[in-house]
Length: 196
Image (cartoon, rainbow, N blue to C red):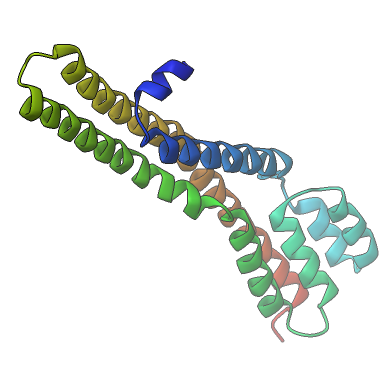
């Protein structure tokens, strides 16, 4: 495996670095989303809020590592002010936190194939340079440049594909959590800010 990377030429260095950063953020985001709970029905908390048991509701929420319930906790804490606006701001903060690191993954998805293509072009230029200087008298040198080109192409595509799948999964999780936040916050606002 290491020999293949070495045979890919110096362009394998940025491709390997891109893969390293991608892997680090995939693991970090994967652990983050594993800790989050979504789809938990808010009815027990809403019942406590309706009964005016705000301390019990906050204690219940502390046991749930859910962005939606953290947003609801902000509304309960600021129920005497403008809980709707405070929950809206908290919701934006939660979604922003969930998106952390995703621009790097998006960049790697785009950059991987481009680095592979650049490595391909460099490898082909080397091959044609050898052919121009020595003719076809050194076929191994020519094929070495072609091999370098193909290794870079394959590595760049590999990095993009292995990053794309988790990236799309994280986007789907963010959308799922965002919908749950909206649902819980809307239900909480109706109770905390009843219309006169």
